[in-house]
Length: 98
Image 1 (cartoon, rainbow, N blue to C red):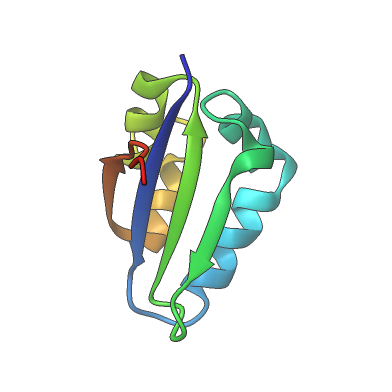
Image 2 (cartoon, rainbow, N blue to C red):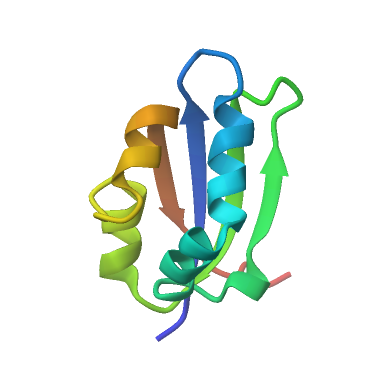
């Protein structure tokens, strides 16, 4: 079942953490990991002006693996998370009828 989620990732201080993390997310390795948990083509990113954090709206199809990924427990992504990510917070989203 597909679920809409919002994730905010705060980067560790230091030069180039945002660029390094985003380059990994767009690499073949990063795309392969992401495709196993979410519909990559539906992901909507937003970047803080100072690049200290990034927000993603994600259409998740494997919630358990998304939680492992976002908590830095995915074995393939662990090294980039350990180097670049200070924290991630996630929320489930639901449609609000107007």
